[in-house]
Image 1 (cartoon, one colour):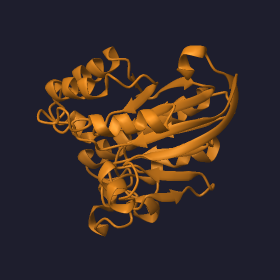
Image 2: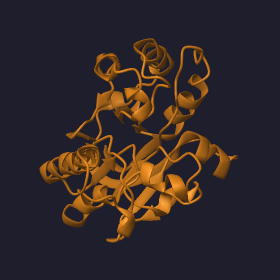
Image 3: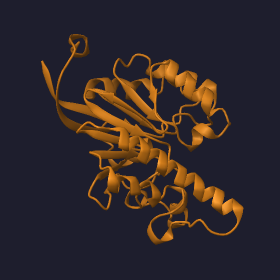
Image 4: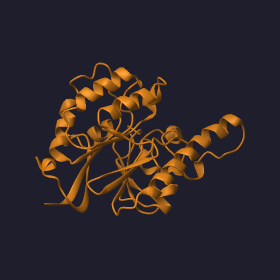
Length: 253
């Protein structure tokens, strides 16, 4: 049979730690009921420890659908992000860092992203070497994103980030910390390579929705934010992508 709609479940900032065993299984059980693909938007662990990644793998192992993820700033905290990524990849999670993948005819591009501010408040490449290093990190992340987007040739494309590409979805956080929640530099690639939707996390007290200058919907899927805004619903964002592709028999089971 042909699939007409693919249901994406997106969530970020689950902050799995050493004591999380059993606490995330209800969330992923709900994902299995409502979605065909799971998107994880960074801060998958609390302190970026391999032990935390191992707990997450146990929590998610019963989920028999494609899982796509990016790392967040918490996943870098202990300097063991490569080991954390390897553990997640070995468990079958497709981790993106300037990479792309395709499931059910939908193309995905993903990066962590970085900070730096929005609009006229975007930090410029000027002054002390430390400032230039900071700004260069944001530029490098934007270039990785653009390169990945340029490689996606299918009609339906989705972007996965941790940091916000627009200010609208961090509104609600203290304005003083806006520059540390994302940067407009991450929005620029979408002017040249538009996508169906953009998902990110990181801003726990931001706004759930916004859009780019080009009208692309942007969804903040921080777990705590979704629980606060939609207390009667499962704490992940469901997004339906219209598509027409054959479905393998086992995927329907």
